[in-house]
Amino acid sequence: AAKLPIFAGYNQQDAQEFLRFILDSLHEELNRITGRIPYEELKDIKGETDRRGSARWWTNHCNRNDSFLMEVFCGQLKSHVTCLWCGYLSKAFDPFMDLSLPLSGDSIEDCLMRFMEPESLQGSERFYCPECKAQVNSSRKLSVYRWPEVLVLHLKRFSFMGY
Image (cartoon, rainbow, N blue to C red; front, side, top):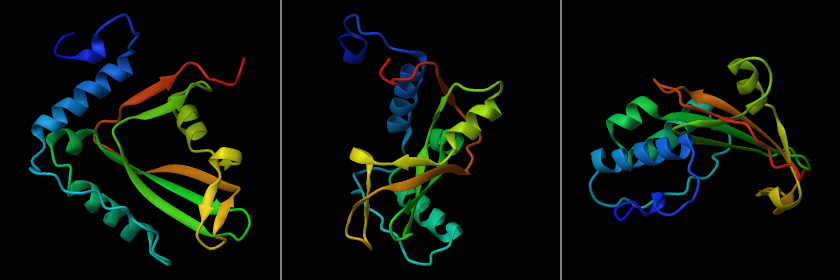
């Protein structure tokens, strides 16, 4: 606990948090990229194909992260956000090392399908639309664009719906 304060005391840690901590720590030690390369925030490019957008986001990620663990465990999620006022479409291709899936249905496929269902972004989760220049209600859909060699799934047994 002296070397790893995250495990000190009586806080409950679950297997997913432990695995994530181990993978992140190993990646930091094995990362072939030396020195700090600043994070570059990527913007939407109007008319950009998914293939080009994915490659641009992946290159941005790989410029700072290059280890055996990234090669094996890292995938890429496509986030597709649509403004419900003007129809503006924003796409992002974020890296992931695990997926947290809602536990629903009878199979992993059911859980993945639920994870990829469109969701409404309203209230404090509203999207800033660059066309409307305002926070707007929107719809978001996630999908796996690039699958990792080894897919780590975290099945969420609990939901925080206020009951």
